[in-house]
Length: 131
Image (cartoon, rainbow, N blue to C red; front, side, top):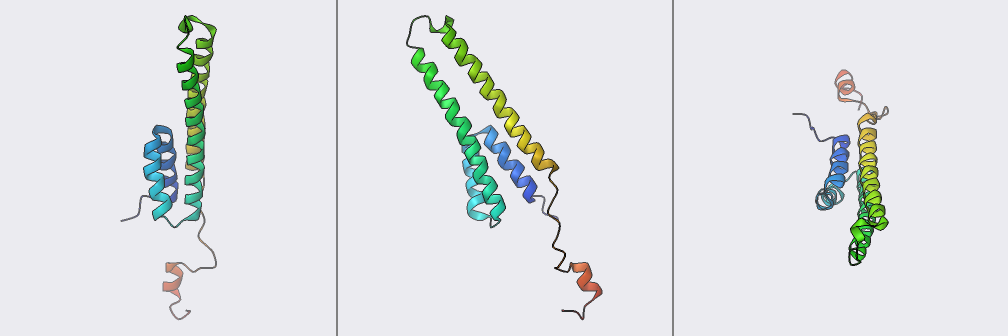
C-alpha cells in the first residue's frame, strides 16, 4: 500500500490545524518536529507555529481592548466598539486568506524530483551487474 501521508499532505494538515485550533497545531506540529527527520517539514512546522502565534497575539490584544473598554459606560454604542468590531472582522478575514493561500500554495507545489544520480529500482533491475 502506498503511503498517503506524503510531505505535501502532512504540510496541508499542519496548516489546517494551525487555522482550526492552536492546541491541535501544538499536538500535531510537536509530533512532526519530534518524530519526523525531514528538516524541511520541521522548518515549515515552525513557520506555521509563528504565523498562528501572530494571529493569536493580535486576537488577544483585541480581546484585552474589548474587555477593558467594556468597563466604561455606553461602550457598546460607541465608536470604540465599532473599531473593535471592524478590527476583529479584518483579522478574521486576514486569517482565512493567509491560511487558504498557504494551503493552495502547498497543493500546487510540485513534488521534489528524484535525484538523477541515484538509480531507480527499475534501472537496477535492468542492469544487475552494475553495483
